[in-house]
Image (cartoon, rainbow, N blue to C red; front, top):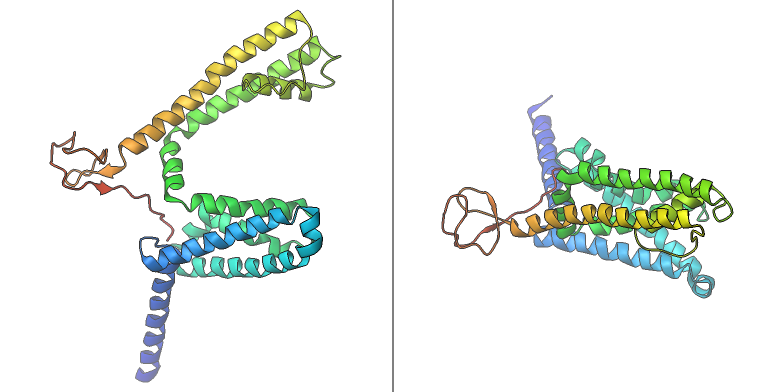
Length: 280
């Protein structure tokens, strides 16, 4: 390869590197004005599409604007597909981004392009992924999920226990009152609703034993769901009270602390703790 060709190859490589840097800042870095404008614009577009899809479920509006809404959604899908390709191209770690939660949601949002027919339930479910995309784009939501990550096993354990109790008691109430509950699934539904203390009233036990079983479910449900609430409350409270970092020891502290409780350093301005994406 000649020196001129090598120079052109290097210039081309530098040009691609510069392009990736610019795209990375636009698509991932919300600390810059350009990044915020890009991401907020995409979020606004997603919300418009979601609202449009909801409007399209009204028969009167569907008859009048159904075709226009579908055409708009199609072009927006093309825009989402282009955005996904650019995100993959500009990500620091492409494999990590593709396999990350955000990358999977971004991919799911463009899957309707490959599914023919609007009547498919799959297409309508995939549209809901756009709402998830909006939710995870807010820093406070990402911070909330990050704070709950350490308690995921405990939460899954409590929810799993609730599910097991619902199935067990649902089968019991079906055996006790087959005239009220036509199958065990209806009994399980009644059990779950009773444990949550919602009480829709679609199924009501008629026998004394069934009512005693319902009372025990209500009491156990209050305790079980209180555990879930307590775990979430503790984690959220910890996130709020440790939303800044000490300027000296970098421990998490409350933003209104004048002195760090760990190293006693005076805090002129606590550094906000930022939950950054690793796939940018």
